[in-house]
Image (cartoon, rainbow, N blue to C red; front, top):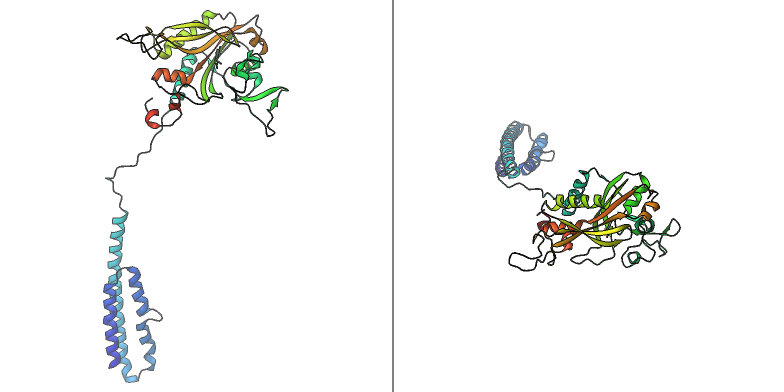
Length: 360
Ligand code: DAH
């Protein structure tokens, strides 16, 4: 019977397609094309009614045979493909535990933060506490209360960043007091004396700003640690003893200090403190007799400004200069960092080069 031959051919062709189906999706395509609602084998089942009675039994059997064969072949191929696909996925998604891990790069503390803390720790050990003040400051705190005469050169636009309002006018606070970026941490002395009664023993680390172009020894933004002591019977001897102790604690017990007369508006008398040079041992020359470049042959390196708090400053801050006296000092953090680690150019501190920063 022609129809039976057709069915056999369709069955053989379908079995071949099933065994060749490359993946589950292709196999499902074959199933739908043959056994789906509009499938070829389904078509034969549907058209059974139109057959002559005597043909029906034989054709019905052939269709059923074909369907059984196709269904069991589908089942078998489906299981086969599923296990192949699972194996392929496990292979593809496997974690290779022998690969090197991805290491998270850890940052380090910046040298400036480390030195600031080192300086602070020395004074905290002496019983000082940490004071703070704003970086955006008024003329009163940065200059006037600190006894800076109106015509002092540090007040000129050359050195100070002034805060200008939208009209281009300098912002006025407290009547005539300009707003500026503090040029020194000394203003914290004023804030502290306004806020607390003596005895005062504080240090104030912080950022300061000056209108300088960055070069090997200048930065427009740098750090200072201010110090202030106000108590009864404080003398220049206390200042010297404290700062000598500080220098030895920071640079080593073999270092000595000297104090040279200097001028600061807020202290009287004022001095600059030098520490003996660590490279030449304070002699000014190296073993071979060559002049020491670190201290330029002097044997000394300047590290801070200091002095006895001027009575005018105490008075401006509401402290009775008859009862109290005090000393103050200001340390340049970048300068100390460079001296301690022989950094030749201050700008290296700002470049963020990890090869440089990781050394400390
Ligand atoms: N403020 C000074 C400066 O920026 C440093 C200084 C000197 C601070 C003497 C002081 C001091 O407290 O007594 O150059």
